[in-house]
Image (cartoon, rainbow, N blue to C red; front, side):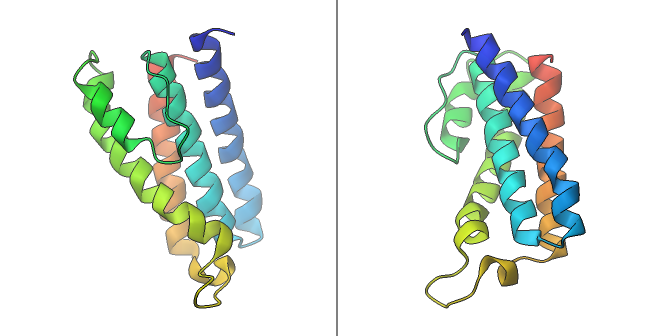
Length: 138
């Protein structure tokens, strides 16, 4: 499998994660919307990194790799790196709580997130997946 094949596969998986959000919204599973939005962003950004020749880190937050790659990339990819990095970090910070809740306080994930957080996460994810799709070209 080539780097391009992997990039396209990651992008397709990211799009499938976005497709699941409507069903999760219907169930008012706001924590799951946040988690799946984060996964979509992570996969899309790993597709982006692969597309530009960077082996993505085996981490949920790829902000450092994006920032490091920015100076070596042509436009329009370079100008998107900082925006992508901020989104990656913001959603990666929500990943654990969206899955585990606040264990120390005994608060389940379903009580940590509401429609507002879900709306924000979904909007960020859709923006990143769409932008990466325009760059990767599939």
